[in-house]
Image (cartoon, rainbow, N blue to C red; front, side, top):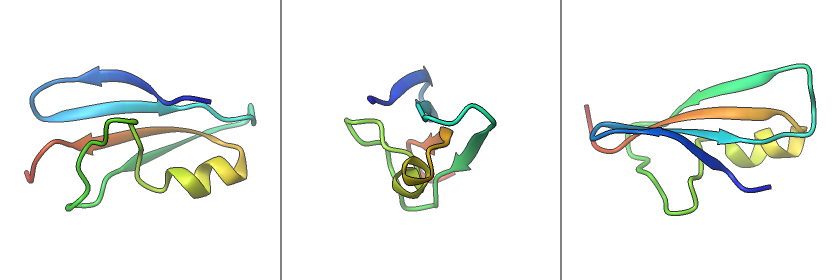
Length: 64
């Protein structure tokens, strides 16, 4: 499944990563050096996907 850009402004992106489980959503905040990628990756997106959970990721566009 493809990640979806939910919100974007000059400071951050909010990205939804779909999952297969219905019982929860994991919220992540990018680490200091991570920047937005064209494919809308979120921090810890791979392990979250392996567990089947949906994720909401906040990714800063620059240090703040």
